[in-house]
Amino acid sequence: AQSVTQLDSQVPVFEEAPVELRCNYSSSVSVYLFWYVQYPNQGLQLLLKYLSGSTLVKGINGFEAEFNKSQTSFHLRKPSVHISDTAEYFCAVSDRDTDKLIFGTGTRLQVFP
Amino acid sequence: DTAVSQTPKYLVTQMGNDKSIKCEQNLGHDTMYWYKQDSKKFLKIMFSYNNKELIINETVPNRFSPKSPDKAHLNLHINSLELGDSAVYFCASSLLRTLYTFGSGTRLTVV
Image (cartoon, rainbow over all chains, first blue to last red; front, side, top):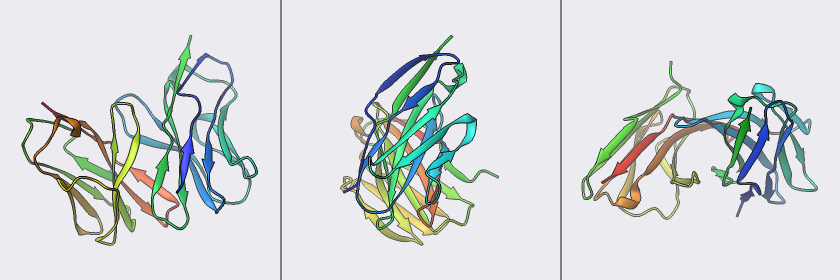
């Protein structure tokens, strides 16, 4: 069965610093990969997704992620964070053979001034 | 023009009551889901329906019963509510497993 690991439960960072949120998935079959952001007391908003093609995916709000098949990773990066990026970030994987989205446990990004 | 809308947004009820949460999508997606987010923010799938047919039932207690009158609607009925049912419930829809859209959530509090 698919699983997603987000190693860091919390990532504190100062404003304008770069950040990387790590995500690893377990599967040897073809997968679709997603990053979602959840602001306090709100729903889930799609940041970006990898379906196929270029391994570097660009998303909204200046975020990007790189699909690495050999390391089964899909880490999220932003070169310079803002206070408004403070939120919970979820990595998710969709198996092409089953119709469900499996989420990681989330990473709380806290941006300090 | 909300894509996936669920009602109510907040629901406070006593233990033992029965309640329903409604969900509608206007995206023309073929599959709909219910997810539960617990107090630790963990998101877990509960059910999925494809064109009114139940596809996934992730060992959810029988007190939870989804109903899909048509492919644009997926409602969740919960009988005999328990304290542990307190959570945020998200409805979602997808197209071809590549585009998943979530509703804004229903915060259920059982007292």
